[in-house]
Amino acid sequence: VKEWLAEAVLWAPWRYRGICRAAKPSEILALNSQRFGEAMSHHPKSFEFARRYGERFVRYLNIGSPSDWSDVLRDEAFINLAIKDGMECEEMLIDLEEEE
Image 1: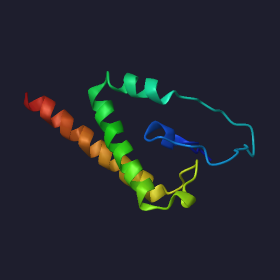
Image 2: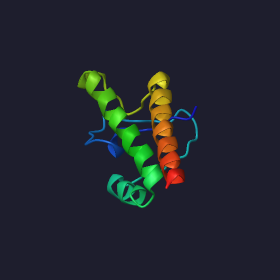
Image 3: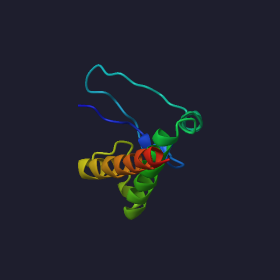
C-alpha cells in the first residue's frame, strides 16, 4: 500500500497526530516544506498544480473537525478530485502558453 504520511505539513501549519509504525519494511522520504515551496516556485506549471492541490487540501481539512484529522489521508475520492482539479489547471496554463 502506498500512503503519504503527514502530507498536510506541505500545505498548512501541522501538528503530528500520533506515532506511526510501519507494518512491513518501508521507505520514507522527508521534505522540508519551506524548501519544497521554494523549489516549486521555479516551475510555474508544477507550482500552479501544487498550489491548487494545496488549497483544496486545506479546504478538505477545514470541512472536518480537528479531532478527525489524521497524519494519513485515506480519502481516495478527495485525492482523485484534487489531482483532477490540478491537472485541469495545468492544461489551461499549457493552452494559454500555446496562444502566446
